[in-house]
Image (cartoon, rainbow, N blue to C red; front, top):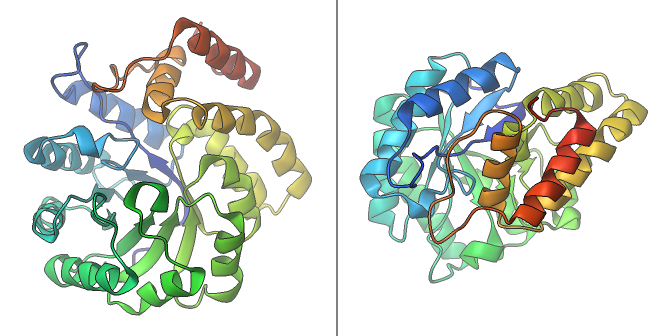
Length: 299
């Protein structure tokens, strides 16, 4: 896996459930993968926040990773989201992800009792030693409480296999500092929806994006225009509509918003798992108007 290159639009994908939210809908999951791969998405990131990992049992978490790897079938990399309240659970998930063929791991630190910098380093080192796969550190301080400076985040890159960082801090200054001053130590990806344009335009080599699951063609087009063609004006034009979607999703329960969006574009993935509830009729209508403007709602 040392030659793995993670680049482009990485779709933070959902965990589809049956109508009552009690069971993983495996056929639906496979269909979601085919749709995203055919749209040109560069990689899949299951069992992250968008994948409702915190609501999954350990067995379900493992099964979802296994299903995404099987369905991707080597067409695109699968970066398995792993995390739990202890090192033991995280390492168990990491070993399983490697065993079933995941290409890399997106690792979130324990998210109940906040870890300090040295604790985060110890935690990541233990996961790295156990799994031996490339690691994307999931920096989401609003959930984990682990608030690290840009310099500290860069230092995580000194740990073997910790090559990447998904930045879901919402701090554009810190993200820019990582991209400008520390790209030789760790490659920072944007993971905050409304900063997708900023991240790509600032040189991020990838964006981990939940909205890409709803509008994959448009997300890939933004990448191609902005990152590959270096067309800033064209990128701004595309982003004007996509930003409305990103802004909306950040204003509601994110998972409920993404799953409502999937239903509206004709690719339903079941409800969010309780206690998260579906969008209200009013919010659903607002989302439909945004998607209509992008031109992607189902007929």
